Every structure is written in structure tokens, then in C-alpha cells.
Image 1 (cartoon, rainbow, N blue to C red):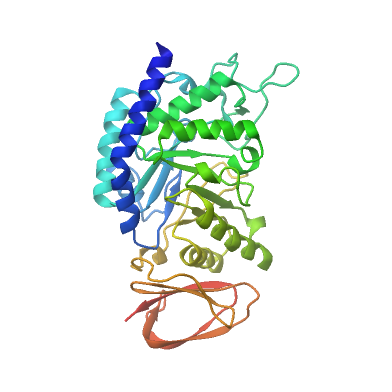
Image 2: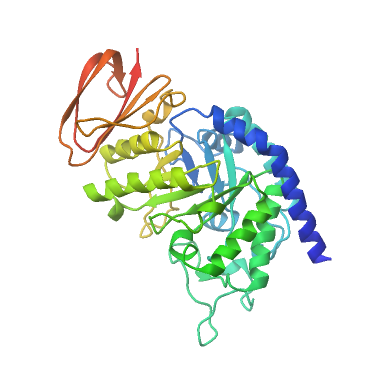
Length: 398
């Protein structure tokens, strides 16, 4: 009976996703830029209230991609946006979402898409580690040491995390089932897998596991993985739509690091399964790094961007973030591809303006336009601007 249930869920997923295919494609084709994403946790500013469900939906709808995961976020005391909860005391054993949270989440999805028709909504499925409360302590799905104790996993969570045994066939089937449930519910457009770059890419068993998840979410379901290894993922590429490029400060604090960041982003844009939905996340740094990252995202990809905190020494949830005025600029759609200028600048045209990136080490540069443009943040129209080294710029047509 259980096998039949899973088969029906997977069949339902394929039918559901195929029905949504044109809607997802339409959202992506109409999406305007800048495009910002939410990785689990919300905007953290007093100017953006989150006290009520309506306020959380309004804040969530500012983003074009959003993923959540109830186990960890609820453990932190963070209120969810969509709000699904698995229907088992041990959420790792769940077969579905609770009926009430499923109904509420479907209603919340409709409200989000009314506010922002471009949104793509994902559910993180746990596969590498999980809070200790995710499964019974004696479950065979925990990875254990030689003494039979659960192996400790991530140490930055709200409770102890332990490694899951993704090589266990029944656990792999359970992950596949939960991914299928998430998409078949009609709430989520796909799934997100954390910790993939440093664990999944190099393990053939993980790749087989990924193939099964692709089958579960259907041909057109979205799969985004955390590329915490920060390099291309050629083995995983045929099965995934996007990389969550979680760029910690030590990966982008040199000119070479910024060049690699851009090169890797281009690789993901060119080599992943369509539709491609890459998510570039710059962590820590100053406003120049925030604008540099935004410019890199806008010039070298058609993906989304986030400048947010991830500091495991801080007990606050990771990926809380501010909303910057540059995110509200109305650039429209890209009207051209990246151009490498003779003086080392990178530019890309949009319907309503031009994005410029001056790489670290390129020195101060002057850019000239044939018409008046307005630099974001300054407001005064001009045709000539001096650009600092290591910075990104958005110029809007007058």
C-alpha cells in the first residue's frame, strides 16, 4: 500500500508540474530586475514589520524566489511565510503536510502571487543532516559512528543537528517521497537541497539520489542546490536548475575571488538545466561589496541576488537581511548581453537603464553616455561619471 501511495504521489506531481509548466515559464519570462531572493529567513529591519501574517506575506512578496523549511525555522522561532508543517511528530517520517497548514499555505501562495506574479516558491527537503527531533533517536536513518552514536552535524542550529544516512535506500526513498509531496501539493514549484556542493557532487550514490528527486518533482519541477563548495557542478548539472552560491567572506575578499565568483556564475548560467534560476548570495562586507555583488548578478546572470548575514557565532537565524533602495529600481528586462569594455568595465543594458561593474583592481574609471542618465543613489542626471574601483553601479535612463 505504501509503495502504491508513493507512486500515486509521484504521478500526481508529474501531472501537477506539467500543468504548471506554462505558468512557471511565463513568470520567468516576465520577471523584471533587480531580482532578490529569500533564503529561509526574512528581512530584518524595523521599517519592514513582520508581526502579522499579512505583514510577513507582504515582506516575502518583495522577493522573486523564496524557500523555507519548517523544522529548522520553527525551531528558531521564525514565523513561516507559506507555513506548511509536516504531519508527524517526527517530521522526517511525515507522509504529507497537515491539512490545516496545507489549506493555509495554498491561500498564502495565491496571495503572494497576487502581490508578485514573478515569484518561485520552494521547499527545502532535508537530506544531509537534521535536528535531533527530526527522527526518533533509534532511527536507522541517522548516520552513526563506530560506537553506534549519531554523528554530529551542523553546530549552528537551534538544537543539536546530526548527519542523515543518505546512502540508506529507504531514507532515499523517503526524501524522494517528501519532494514529490511538496510539489504535488500545488504549494511549491520545486525543492531546495542544502549542502550539495561539498557532499553531493562527488558521490555517485548522491547523484543517483538526485536523479530520483528529479523524477519525483517531474521534468519541469525546479531544483536548486546549495553550492557550498563554490565551484562548478558538472555531474549534477543535468538535473538541477540553479545554484545557491553562498559566498562567505573568505571567498570574495580578493580580486581573484571576485573574478572566480563571476566566472562560476557564468558557468552555472550556461550549463544548468533550463529554466536556470541561480541565486548569488554575498555575505558580509561593505556597501561597495553589496553593490558589486548586485552588479555581478545583473550583468553575468538572469538570476536573483541576496546580501545577507550568515554568522554561526551569532545565535540569530542565518540569512536575515536588509532591503536596500537599489532593490526597488525598475530596470525592467535585459535588452542585451554582458559587454566587456576596453577599459576593463563590464556593462549590460536593460529596458530602463545600464548596469556597470568595475572589478577590484581595475582602478578608477570614467564612463560616458550619449544621453542623460541618473546614477542610483545620487539622483542628478549627467552623461559622464567617475567610477570607483571595486564597485557596482546602476544608471537609469532619463
